[in-house]
Length: 88
Image 1 (cartoon, rainbow, N blue to C red):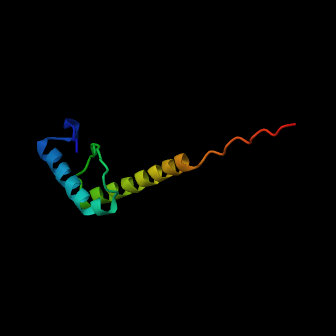
Image 2 (tube, one colour):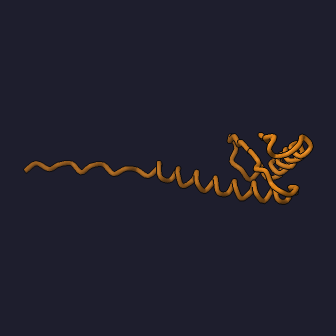
Image 3 (cartoon, rainbow, N blue to C red):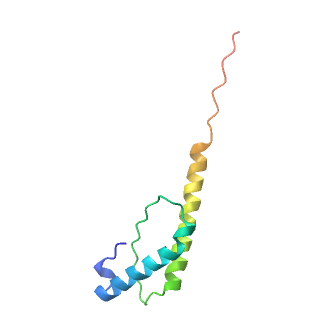
């Protein structure tokens, strides 16, 4: 979890990290094992709540899983062999 200074003062940055860690702890069982996540929150005008962070992480993980599944389907599709030329 990386929170830049633009996010706010130290209290606000640490609260954001705590909320993200808790949301991850609750949602991690729904995510694939052996994956690394880099989470960089964007500066927001209002204070974050745990439910907002959980909803955001859940939506992002769903989008990411869909993208990785589509990419895996594209690469796993066998390419047809060229037809052999027949003698004349």
